[in-house]
Amino acid sequence: MPKLIGLSLSKCIEDIFLGRVELRDVEKIISRTAFNNEKELEYVLIEYSGDNRWLSFGYWMNRPGKRVSEALHRKRIRRAKQIARELYAQGRIEQPRLTRRQLPNICATHHWIGTETFIEYIDDPDPLPESDDFNEWLGFETLETIKKLSYDEVENRFWTWHKNRF
Image 1 (cartoon, rainbow, N blue to C red):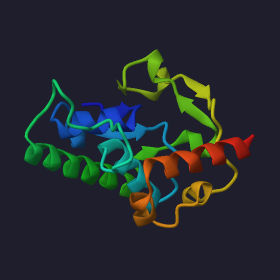
Image 2: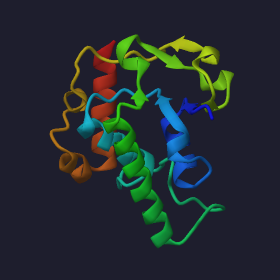
Image 3: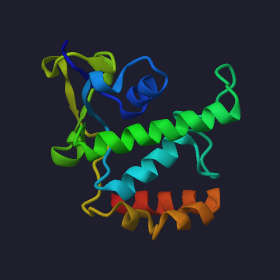
């Protein structure tokens, strides 16, 4: 059976941890993300899970209408993070945004496809800064630093960084 290729890290991992897709059936995920190492992947996972107190969203948050017990939700989040780490360690997450400043256009297809032939790439509308160090961009020294900041402090750092980019 042909393997699946995913085009959205958050949606594909959610399908896997909810049991809609088996991990063994996934060839790779071609993501719109731009992390360079395991540490930066952890920041992405915190954002997706809504585990940071200053984030008001997260792709995998326990939302009304889909709400499950807190214990089941925490178990799903642990599983999602485990899946992402495993895929990254195996080299099964590709990030064309890092290498050629392009993104897969998931609006042109579904987030699961069977062949790369049908992937449409678009130029990155928000190119990354020249620095390769994600933490340096916003002045975050460690994950613990981020967790200690208020929402306003993070927001201020973001807009300062964004303004200085252009």
